[in-house]
Every structure is written in structure tokens, then in C-alpha cells.
Amino acid sequence: LNHNTSHLGQGEASCNGANPMTTGNFTVSCYANALTVVDTSTCLKSCNSSSSVDIQFHGYDYTTVPVSILVHGSNGSQSCSTVSTGYTGTIELMCNDGVTSVANHSCVQKPCPDPESDDENATVAAGYSWTKDCQTLSTSLVGEIVLTCTGGQIRTNITGCG
Image (cartoon, rainbow, N blue to C red; front, side, top):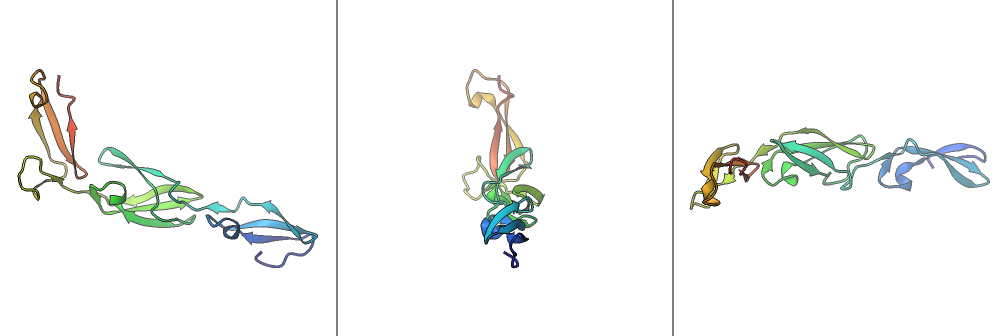
């Protein structure tokens, strides 16, 4: 309790003392040296790895969670690479009563390994696209495969093959 509560009186107790994943105070009443919880509506939940949030980078959907506990009303930063290894920068998450949301992000795509080069250090710039003939997959196919470097990965689009 935050202060002494007399018989038939009411007082406040720390939500965090009852549940480490909450903040605020709850109301208790005292009767014959026994406390009874009256109201817990002001106990607000922190965010942890079970409170995920969706985020989109360059048209692709990802899901992330706080890398450490975020107390209600606080923000926390983490690396974009916690969402996808193909990105650098920072994501700022915020917590509101157990619900995580993205406050801001500055995620930038990494380049991709160049699949056409024998040099293992050669890269293709993020966002770069090129095409290949669909017959590289099967001689019975026509059209073009579109390859794009996105988030450190070569994405293949074969919808142009038929």
C-alpha cells in the first residue's frame, strides 16, 4: 500500500507490486485487517514479446515485437534488422496499455549479393531490377522473369511467364 489504510477506509496499492507487467495504482478497501480490491481499471499493461505489431517495408509485410519490455506510455528503439536482416536503421515502438505500435522508423534496404558475379563481395543496389527469359526455368515457357533487389534479398516475380 502507498499509505496506511484504516478499517472501512480505502487506499491505493501499486499495480506493479501485484503484477510486474503493469503500472499505475489500484484501489483497495480495508475491513477487519483484510484488504479487498475495489478497482483495477487504472492498472495499465506493459508490452512484451507477446504484443506484436505489423510493419511494412517497401511493399512487404513484416511483424515485430519489442526486444525488451516497454512500460505503458514509453517508447523503445530497436534495429530494423530485428524485423528483417536485409534492413538497417532504427524502429521506434511505443506501448499503450499492452498494445505495441510503430511510432516511427528509418529503415533502409541493404544491397543484395550479385547472383551473376563470381566475386562473393559483389552486390546489386537495393531497388535494382533486371529480367531473365522464362525459358531458363523451362523450355516450354515464354515471357520474362523479373528479379528485384529488395531488403537484401533477390525477389523473383514469375507472373510474366506463361
